[in-house]
Image 1: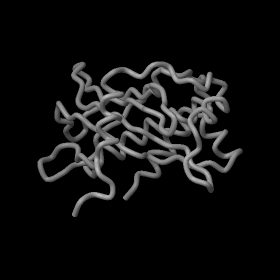
Image 2: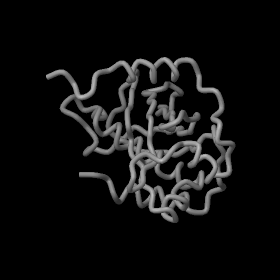
Image 3: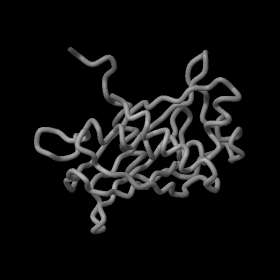
Length: 177
């Protein structure tokens, strides 16, 4: 089940936090609970994606995106992700999550997130591409950027994000059986 109570707690915790600018980290802290585990007694890979929501949604609120989305009846969807897992997160481990928006292209915003263990090791690192939507489909990122008060032209994306995006554009859709 989706952790609605944990999300509500995060939104409450950061309701009066200072706004963050493009590229600035939103830092949050989380615990790996027993219901987050897989059969190997570590953080389940699917649950990892859900816990990343607990950093990304408050980040969107602090950046001003959520109020604008409500005002304009926009939605937000994840259009792709890539996660690199490097260290196990076990029951009751505490993690620090860092979330930030890196930039955008014509259709997608690129969001980078990472989970850090208390010993300083990075447990996982994720790249998400997200789209803002309305009743007509994807809202151009330049429109979203202007609504947030940013230049409609994105800062340069790092080469590795450009390469990932280019690789995704070569991937067949729909998949071939």
